[in-house]
Image (cartoon, rainbow, N blue to C red):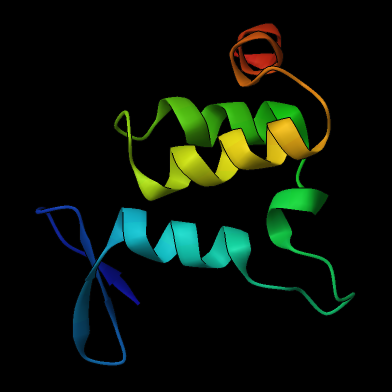
Length: 82
């Protein structure tokens, strides 16, 4: 796995956008059967959220998880931002 300068990552010889890979990983399930976005803490999710562009798949996934937990995305992410 190699990171390139143009915001892509090389996985198995194919160039893929980092944001797309991150969004897929957040929605995939880990060994315990739970989605990664459910397992990560809000501080880590807030860091991922602010590192991505508005409207990106990563931000939408994190906002969806915040709503599922009964939080307003804006409030919970602002509280946990570093």
